[in-house]
Length: 221
Ligand code: C5P
Image (cartoon, rainbow, N blue to C red; front, side, top):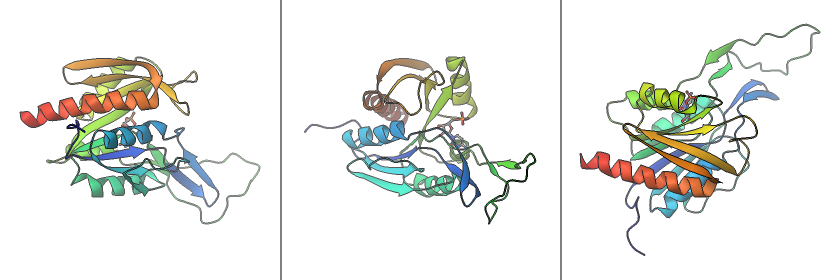
C-alpha cells in the first residue's frame, strides 16, 4: 500500500471516563463509553501511526495494533499520559477526565446515618493544560463537550489550554455520550471544519486526517 498520513509518527490517545473512589464500593465518574477515543486510536493505526491508548474503565476491546494502558483515576491517567508524552508526536485527549475527586478515600464502606452526607472534593490536575505548559510537547488535540454555545466555548478552550486542535461536540438530549453516532466541529487557530452526524469510526477517520494535515504543516514551519 502507498504512504499513509501518519507513517512514522507516534500517537498517544486517552479515552473513557475516570473513576474517583469515595470508598471501596463507590466512586464519582463521568458519563463516557470510551468509544470515540477507541475509534480515534483505531483510525490512527490505520493511518500508519504507532499508537498507545491510555484507557479509563471501559468495556471495550483493544483495537488491533494498539498498545493499551489501563488506568482508573484522573491522577493515574495523568501519570500514564505524562510518562508517554515525551516520545509521542501527537496527543489526542478524548478522555472524559473527572475534574474533582474526593479529598480522602474512606478505607471502609460509608454507612447511612439518616443525615445529609457532605463530600469534600478537590480539583484534579488538568492533563492537557499541564502538557501544553511544557516547553517541548506533542501536537495537542483536545475535545470539548458542551451543551450550548459550542463554537464559542470550544474556541475559548482551544486558546486557553494552548491546543493545536479541538474537537467539539454537543452533549445532552441523547447526544454524544454512550451512543455510536455523533457530530464534531473541528477548530484550530485560523480554521474550522464541520463533520456532520456520522458513526464515530467515520468521524475518527476525518479527525485523524485533519490532525495529520495540521501536524505536517506545523512541522514544516
Ligand atoms: O475543560 P474541559 O474538561 O472541558 O476540557 C476538555 C478537554 O481537556 C478534553 O480533551 C479532556 O480530555 C481534557 N482534560 C484533561 N484533564 C482534565 C480535564 C480535561 O486533560 N482534568
